[in-house]
Length: 160
Length: 387
Ligand SMILES: Cc1ncc(COP(=O)(O)O)c(C=O)c1O
Image (cartoon, rainbow over all chains, first blue to last red; front, side, top):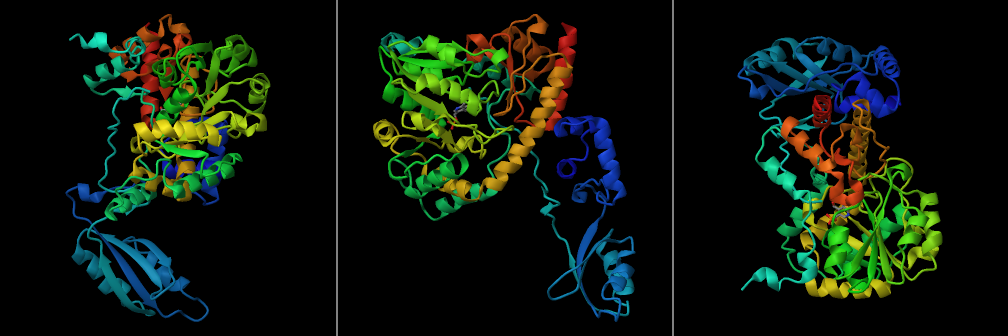
């Protein structure tokens, strides 16, 4: 049931506990308990909204940054990663295979702000060898959701 | 000239579908939640659409062989075997048609004509009876019962059979009731049908949308296989209604004859759709599963919702319809639907549109978003309280 619950929540975390209970063929209390357990175990980390900031007038930029790092003896990449992901501007940070080591997502209000963050905070970190910053110009899809696509039900009334 | 006088009697006498009227009303209204449309709300999965587009880009815009591309028939053959354990030779036991609709029509026309009877259990898909009448044959209806969970019972068939019976149309998972038939249910009716010279037209368009147990086809009974025409398609399972593609499987002697009608009346089914359908069978499985999972969740919420607001409904375990009993309202189906639409702007289809015995029920589809279902239930509850 937990897998099924997670799959429901991943799609839509705004269903009521009662609705989820009906979908899972169980009671509301069971669902509440399962969710509590998943939260406590750190399996469910957050219930976030996916927002298209472009639709607002506010300035908003996202940058994907490729970071090359010299791993430190005995600590691998974890220590550097930690120094990086602790900045609130960093919204995502992963160790990746390939031509660079850390893939870092930084969000800010302006390009300048993000560029300064990279220049003043990221790049100077001791074991960081290089940063390549890619500003997002247009977001097409994120977390499985296509942007700028509104669903209109234009099915015609047919006789069946 | 009075054109109407020129029209053939059996066409003139066939009434248009009762559902039309509501859709005309809806077109004039705003903010209507439709639980009336019998087709998926999902778009065709992209991998399928893309193959259709590629085929057009490559200029593949010609006819196919009458029966459909052999590659598609081969995929259908594999699918029928893998999914249902049914073996059909792609060479002469599979015919690709313009939707399951065409397959239903030509199967009926191949086997029944003036003086013949075709057994049509109701409530059921509106086209069955119409097609029987256009063929000049006489539909003999069986009234399925809510207390039997709308399953077909052997006694009902025995009572309907006469020496004129040529065929019976069986449609499970069922539109409009959402009922299914399991192995034991079929076994009982196979006992009746196995020794009779009666063709079974088995409309299995919703086979993939079976939420409990596995889909059973009457053709899985060896004694029935040769006399059954299995009809399936892509509309419901793959969300491909607009592509107009489906198929019939059966004994070569039956298919050869059906193919003649198809050949002269249709030529071949749309080839863009055929290319897309090949991809659907090759790679569509994960998407079918995803959609089915979503339908199932909505189904459970809708059934639970109807029961909570006092509309009795048996557990539908197939297709994407719920068929609640509205007798508590004290209204007949037609009035219920019309007043619900006018008062609360929710569209459902009166049960009697699917046969007289559907009176006292309405059909609601959960091929719509969970938000719509939730809101519709609130409105229907308010409507019931206002009565
Ligand atoms: C039971 C049943 N059979 C057949 C069809 C026809 O489907 P298509 O012609 O799109 O394959 C429908 C469509 O609503 C249906 O509900």
